[in-house]
Length: 167
Figure 1: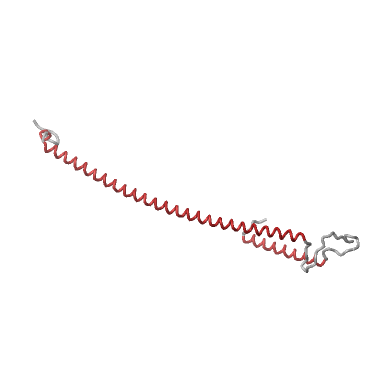
Figure 2: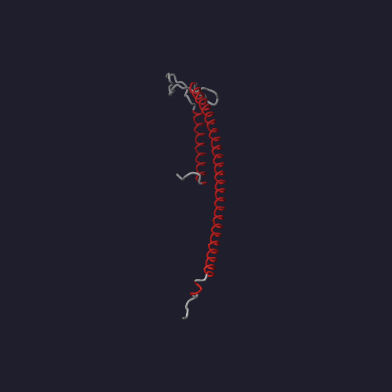
């Protein structure tokens, strides 16, 4: 009888064949187990490095946030002090304004402006002098015209520079 196949049938009952197959399977399993342990160690190392880096970044972010909160608190405290100081200045300005309203207005030369209505014949009809002399009025008119012209020139310059929208 002629045997066919790769392994002769008589060899299947041999303990040496089974021992060789077992050794091959054992070495293959050991090699796969070794590779698995190596990958696990690598992953654990990467994970611990990731955790350490994440913790470091978290502490840096916390320190930055604490510093920003401290800076904002200092700015807020400074602004509160400034507002209280401005409140006192505002009260002083209000009192000064009331004092100015209580007395009659003065001209630049120191004379008091009349607060009584004056017409051509005067308040009492006796022909009192006008309350604002014509020369003072014309000087005021000239200064106002000069100021208006200056404002117009500034507006034109701002438009040319692109600082204000065109009318």
